[in-house]
Image (tube, rainbow, N blue to C red; front, top):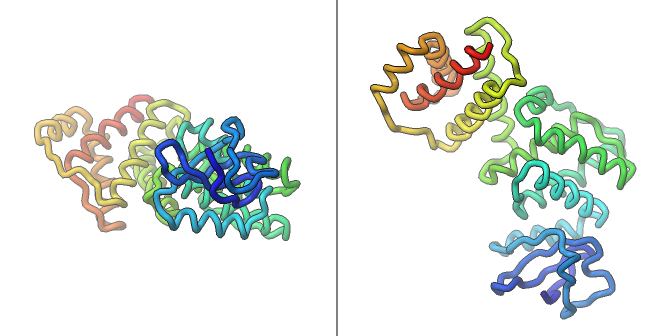
Length: 278
């Protein structure tokens, strides 16, 4: 690979084997090099295909604005997230986190701490992302000597969770988290008890509700109907079914969202598993 443009010592523009323009990241990848020089493949940490010219422009603006050490820390955090979470994050995700870290580190250096009202829910609903975010805070402390709060770790976790669904923005992710929490509260109140949040069935229900809420926000709810299965779960799991109807009422009255029989069926099955586990 040949260097087409150097953004800084760690980021360059090149072409891949398919002649697609790519952003290439690697520590010291452009050190003592110039345009036209070859890139050492073993020095490459991450490579993005530049599908849109706007992404390259964003990257160039980011590199001009943000110190190289913060860009390098952001890359290290994203590579850790890819390893721990098992998701290949996009260039947009890298840009988003790097931009956020830049301002978060500035705030931390000025001892400005912002509250995070969703911290408790983030820990529960995005546990993998939060564990990575806590390690990210350690990386920032180790590499940049900046102390960041647990609240800030929660925001980093939201960035990671938001990036898995690239079509969402942060505001949508936070709104989704609020709806997930409210649905779980409906279930708790209906049965009048707390559930084992470490159980596999509970985690499955939370995951189902998370994707269910994502479909709501993207108008992707299933319109399929299966009257036989609907009547079956109604008779076989009456308590879980009635609880699902409470969830349906909450969504309709508080969010003006109507859900189909098929969504009720799947929600009933997941609730019943948790109730039986309890």
